[in-house]
Image (cartoon, rainbow, N blue to C red; front, side):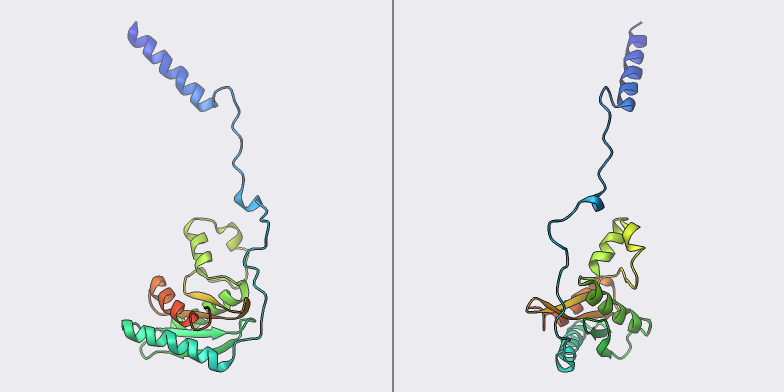
Length: 177
């Protein structure tokens, strides 16, 4: 008799848990429905980075790569995403030539680090990423901002994502202070 009572209580408890008890559950709010007060990544465009400054950013990234014994490709673009300066270290992957430029272009055009897109993919938030043109969801692309204005982007490729990002940050630091 005791066993029957315990079983009945367990079945009723499970039924209440499944039905949610007496209160109806509210659907979860879609985070994309939240309307921010300010525009995210709202960086106005400035005068495009000069060749000399782009080459200095590339040189800083290359110096960091050499210090770590990594072989990288480094690209710097202007705010429009067009190539200003590029370097491929001896022995760097050839496929990474296009990837470095793509990272720089994405960082400049979308005014955010490419790591933002990588994080969205890693977290399974692909819904809006899949609708965007010319995005690369891999870290190692950083916007170049001077005086609050976007003057370009830098992209590094040839190592792991974290290696690309580390080198890219050194190149970006020549501009982003």
